Length: 145
Image (spheres, rainbow, N blue to C red):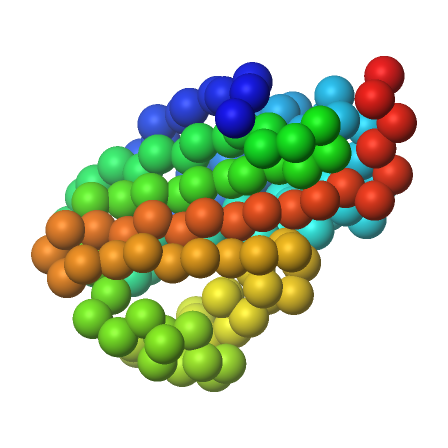
């Protein structure tokens, strides 16, 4: 993997806009289309929201790490990592409309949105150890400038 960048952020919903901006800045030199850029930023935003809401439940604080890298000239890999509560049942958590959050703030569509905008998504998690969401996106319009 080449051109690796790592960023550490507070695991809060307020970190979403910074995470989106960092993702956009990293991917910009790959010359993505506006649609590709929007899809990547949205997927990152959903992953960050999951960390803030589910990784560190209300009343707890924590950090998250974003890792960006190219696995090919036209393909970006993004990891969103936390050391939070983890996910007990990954398959269940990835089902559309499933959420562990109470209230109306969560639709249970975070992983579904990530899957729809990225070419591949992989979730590794262990209860009480944290979660790593790996997302891969191949850009259709890579020119190699």
